[in-house]
Each structure stands twice: as C-alpha cells, then as structure tokens.
Image 1: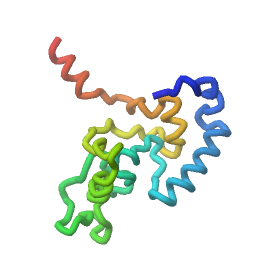
Image 2: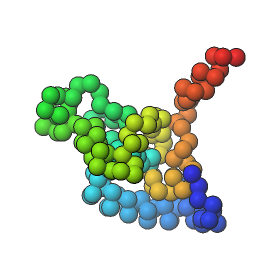
Image 3: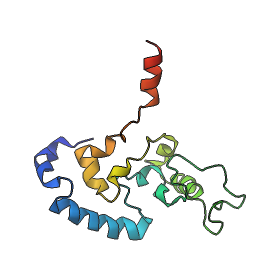
Length: 145
C-alpha cells in the first residue's frame, strides 16, 4: 500500500540506494535488538503479536508446525519457547492488530532477504509474491472456467 502523499520521495528509496542502506541499518539495530528481527524484507511483526516468525527453526509464517511440546516449547529446539505460542499470547494483548494473526500470509519472497521492510512496504515491493506463486483464489477462479 503506497502512501500517495509520499510518492515524490520514492526516487530516493530505490533498492540498494543510500537511503535504503541507512534504513536497513536502522531496522537491524532497532527491530533486531527489540524483536530479534531476521530482516526478511516482508515484516509481519504487527500481525504476529510483535513476534518475528522467522525465528521459527522451520521458518513457518502461518502458525505452528504441530510439533509444539506440551510445555509450549519448540520440537526442534526444546529449550526455546515456540515462536507461535509467543505470537498467540502477545496478539491477544493487541486490540488493534491482534486479529491479524488469523490471516493467511503468502509465501515469503526470499529475494527480499536483507532489504528494508519499510522501503519494501512503502514502494509496494513487499506485496509482490515470490516468482511462481499463484494465490488460491486465482487457482479456484481458473478451475471454474
């Protein structure tokens, strides 16, 4: 979703440009320290209870794997609390965005790894699905023809 009032500034936000490099550093320092952000380039912290789903050892972006232990810990790293248990608990405390935990996210575009999620969101790049991905709605619409 591009903010029309800021469109004139898009030219400064070119991928790998100077402004983006500064924002990447800002994101790495800010989001990295506070949320253990993994710099995927398509940030969904607001819809996952401010929990970075990329901390899941299986990189699951739409919920737990089914191997969550009874104590809420990860099946892969038993001493680590499941990212999705944390996301659920935290989203329950977020009146504005908490419900977004129920939204199904498209697959991560790995080509955006290490880029600024802020720039990608502003320029619309974050909404671009990875190559080859077809949304379920489009598949369903095609089968009706």
